[in-house]
Image (cartoon, rainbow, N blue to C red; front, side, top):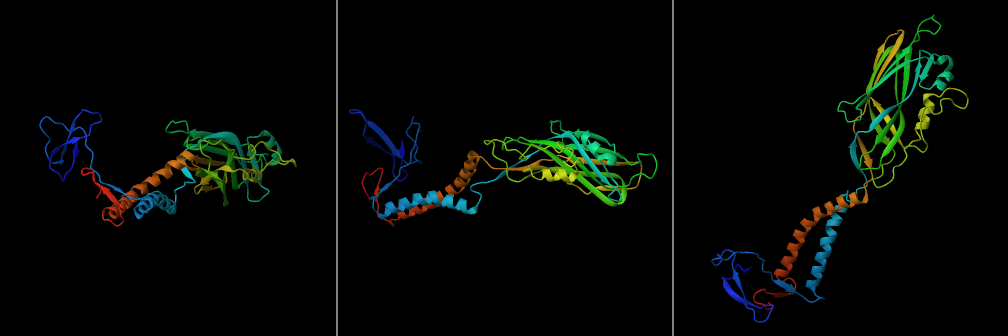
Length: 355
């Protein structure tokens, strides 16, 4: 059934597809009731068609309309910025494990009052008289039981009494704590990243201390965004890094914290310990205790999006500007054609004659 709001209801004979078959179509306004026992099954609007020669002003206006409809949304989206997204990020909590590698360095009131300890027997032997046997307790905290610890705890006890049994105990004015950790970032949005790194905490005071308490967060430092999940993973360091793989230097001396951090600085992706202000308790006793807590929060991991993700976000931005431009340009083209700004031939759907 066809509806024409401006015409009264009337029955018109249409041209059938097969000879000898007569088809009658009711043409009525939408507000006119249908005949008895009639049901509306489908409706289409009546439209007036406008024609023009190929080389005419009306044809040029139509071509300009189509070109503007395609170009304006793209140019506006590109000019505003963020059309081609070069970087993206996700919030991810890494899986951090303790590698059972520790190096401790401490200093007294003078540079000669130096002591050290590590989990490497070869390095401890190279320390000589500076070696101090320490006690270290470590444990992890996983409150939500998801297999990813939220915190790593370290408790160090350093004996300060003289090894010979006589003399005053050693006073601690500075201490450096290096810990070997492994971290895995395996979110599905980017390529997996595995890091064998070292973090360090350091505290010092002009007053001799008997206790140190410090909290901080483990953060990822990347020199460049990670690759997308479609690309192979990249190594965190140019060479495999383990800060106690060479405990003794070529000159026979024990490796120091400076040597470890110098080699670790060559890595592209590293772990960093961001500490809060430490609590240094002054005093001199037989034992110096240090409690270190490393929180493992969710980090912002920056990565390069894949081609599919890039096109998806660009397409959404294009469509967001395409529809407003379509409404404006379509209204402008309708006004130009309908009000005769350019010459066209109008074909009425019912009269069948050019206007």
